[in-house]
Length: 239
Image (cartoon, rainbow, N blue to C red; front, side, top):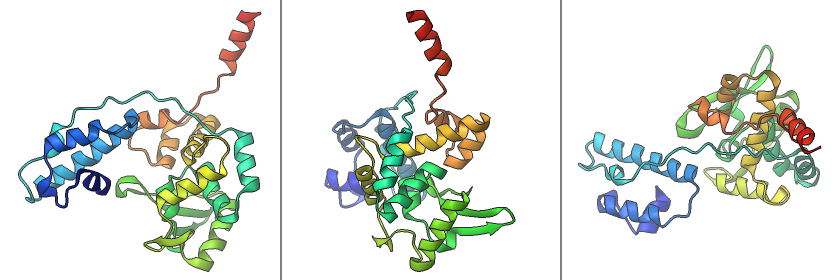
């Protein structure tokens, strides 16, 4: 919302118009899912704006619907991930592991604090501050739990910085992208986690809960299915 306000030159929501929102959206070269996410954000904000009596017009109603795309899962391969881990600085290695081992988003990694670690009879878990303000509890692998605990015991935050005490999500993503080979991003490690987790027991609902998705349809777009059978068919057909 702040980005939109700056780009549109609006200093107050009272200055926004539906026509202005449509114009701003049309100027963006977003992928379909990004455009859909921005539209959902505006729909939520302007519904709240009208519902709380701050204004009379829901300007987001002027925005055209964006169809959901099937999407192609793109998990980071083993060689690229291991190379990134080998060469990364300690805090960047933690960022990579949080995405690859438990599927956290960059904003969720940025907000990890000592108070979010909880212990039960089976080990350590993390209270994750998810998208849309929806918290969830994610069990931590023992090795990752130890690494996180060591860092937060020293600093409070996993990644201390200038954004309310921690690094900004944008900078967390930038650090990961710099460490990963070629054009891989932190989100590709989230795809990696989803793919590996689903392959264990084929339980899409467990993976959905771990990733913090509202719908299993979204989770499905993160999971790259095993193509061994199809590859064998293609090889035999070619021969």
